[in-house]
Image (tube, rainbow, N blue to C red):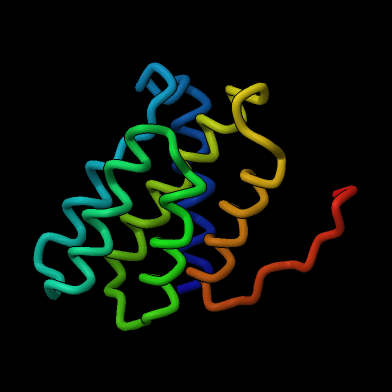
Length: 128
């Protein structure tokens, strides 16, 4: 699964770079939403909180919700891919808007990918 997630993340990053995200600075949440349509009501409720925050560019609000969903476990491969897709989209927006988003936001998104792969985030100092 780690290998699949890495391949998916790399592929999505490449596509996003090649197309410039195609969203005018907004992260696309369609894959995330589709992947959780059949999820239980509690998890779907969490995703329904994250999606508007992602669309609004309020990633500091969306990230803890996604982290909770990831840590809750029991995600299907499709759901992991949906979360991964949304994270890649957010990372692209962050990297294209350095005046709006901090490096810490980008690192926090990277940490979500690490959690999604079953790893632990890298401890960072303020200078990283």
